[in-house]
Amino acid sequence: MELENIVANTVLLKAREGGGGNRKGKSKKWKQLLQFPHISLCEELRQITEKDYGSLCERQPIGRFLFRLFCETRPELKRCVKFLDAVAEYEVTPDEKRKESGLELVDKYFNPKSEDHVPEVEDAMMAQCNERLQQEACKELFKDCTKLIHDYLSVAPFADYLDSMYYNRFLQWKWLER
Image (tube, rainbow, N blue to C red; front, top):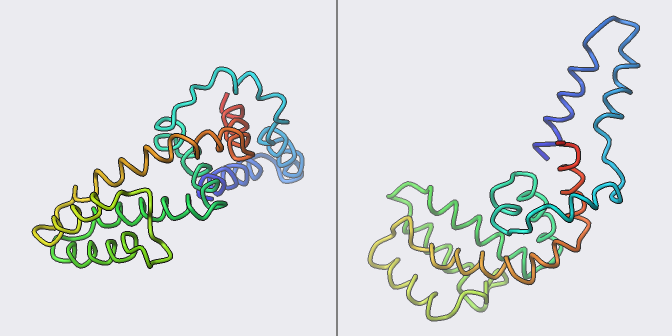
C-alpha cells in the first residue's frame, strides 16, 4: 500500500508540472510509463531472478509485502506471519512491559486451544521459551522460534508463492524498475 501511495504521489506531481493546458497529456504519459507489463514480458526476469527466500521475501520491501499478501490467503501461513509480527512487536516493547507482552504472546500463539496457535513451533521449544520468560524477558527470547517459522516459510510456502500471481506481480514491479 505504502509503495503504491509513493508511486501515485510521484505521478500526481509529475502530471502537475508544465503548462496549464498540457496537464492532461502528461498524466496519460506517466500512466503509460508506470503501467505494469504483461506477465509474458517478465519471463526473462523469472529465469534470471535468484529465488532466495531471504532476499525476495524479507529484504526487498515489495517482495516482503507481496509474500505477506500471499500468506494472507492461507490461514496456516497467516498465523505464522502474525506470530512473526507479534515477536517483532515484543522485541521493541519497553523493558518494564516486556514480560507482560511475552506472556500474552505465549498465551496467544503457544496455547493449543488458541485459534492463533502456531503448531510449526515444537512443544519443547515452546516450553523452553515459556520457562525462560518466567526467569527473564530478554529481547532474543523468541529468536529460535522465529528462525523455525522462517525455515518453515522458506520451503513449501515459498515454492507455492513462486507459482502464484503474487510472484508474477513482483516480477512486474522488477520489470518496471529496469
